[in-house]
Image (cartoon, rainbow, N blue to C red; front, side, top):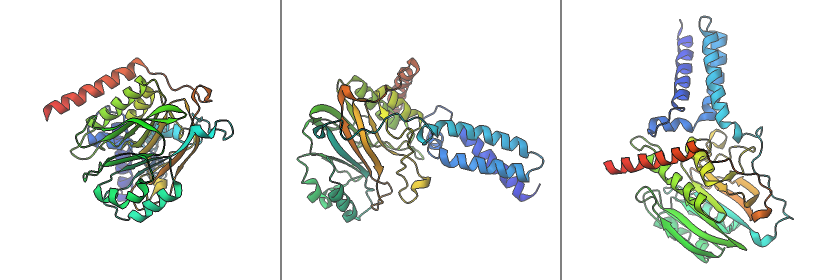
Amino acid sequence: MNLGTLSIRLLAGILIVVTGLSIVESNAWWIRIWDFPRAQILVALLLAGAVALWRDRQAGRWIALACAIAAAWQLYRIFPYTPFAEQEIAFADKTRVSQGRCFSVLSLNVLESNRDYARTARLIDRVRPDILLLMETDRRWAQALAKQLASYPHRLERPIGNTYGIIFATRLPMRDGRIETIAEKDTPSVHAELTARDPFRVIALHPRPPLPGQDTEARDAEIAIAARRAAAARQPVLAIGDFNDVAWSHTSQLFKRVGGYLDARIGRGTFATFPAQMPLLGWPLDHMFVTPQFEVRSLEVLEDVGSDHLPVRSELCLAGAASMNTRPEPVSREDRRDVKETLQEYREERGKR
């Protein structure tokens, strides 16, 4: 066996193993990270299988078959976020919903260590969103954007130098606006009631990602708690932010079903935002979920402004009962059980600290 054949077998084996690991229900960081690069692993599996079939006369067929099975699983998980899937939200006709019920949203993880404040300031000045969410904002970011933030009558700010600071600003009328820590210490989230003719709630999240030594109990618990709050709300809900989780993960899908959300990316593409320098190879970490009362006029990923994330801009309309959207996926008993287990695992892990 030559070195090339051995290398292909080793690569195929690794890709098949990490595909298997991604199926395992675990909060361990070294398992959960394999939720992220599913598209990249899919391409690598197809290439490895093709090369094995071409170069490995002994085991090539079996390796190609195993790669094809693993690739089919990866495709199954990401397929809804391709243009070949059925769209979940039809973009709204601009003439059907009155302008007073429509507003724009800009969400951006600025990258705390990014000190090119001017590019983000110019973006805000150009886009002029009605709702602005900035994450990883420390005091220097708050000071650098003071001019832009001053144009917003309602603001919630908690600048922290730990990469989890948050700033929320809006021109829409706001009540019951607050910043909370609902799971992990010094990891704030925003909860507020806004009005666009009718009231609706906003939930903005930036939980911690899976990293060496940092499993996902707290992240998953924060997302689960936010989903429960949306389900209990008697108002339409908009959920935005950098979830540090991909759209197709079990946690994000559970959040979507339990919260009764729809996702405009389904049937359109991944709208990848990280890493900013390689969007075609990136992951959709920055999210915008809406309950069915909202209609979406536009959704776009904007240009690089020096962060490791790309900005996300959307235009939404609060259509209420007149919305043309489909119904969200139903919540199953298994979903409710998974939420309870997620919260129980978080409590047990927190009890050990």
